[in-house]
Image 1 (cartoon, rainbow, N blue to C red):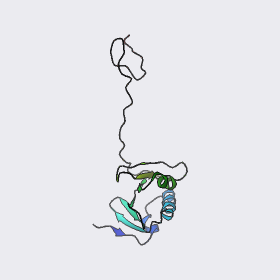
Image 2: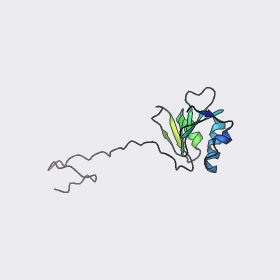
Image 3: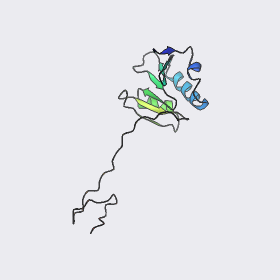
Image 4: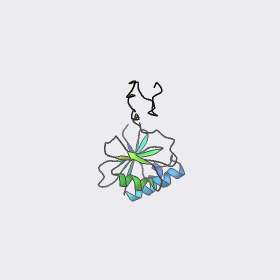
Length: 131
């Protein structure tokens, strides 16, 4: 089913919580987003001169062009991070963020290596329990 254009931002946000609506209205006005479409699981927001549309999910919005744009949209103390899709964009978390989360890459902490005396693998503390 093709996206359906909402007649207004207010109607597009009817299922968002009041706190999320306030945040979304603010960044849509700041970014001059003018058209809103119903898509599967999110609202597509577009405006003149934007390379990427924003995707407004129940708990987050993705597609901000720069870190500065995401920081302004998230507001003071708001969470924002780089996004992988599309690469080079940013996402922000909404105040009420019970929706789907972006997949996070697991990082491994640096291994302290091996004991220089017995060559056993060292624990994270770096102190050999064998020697």
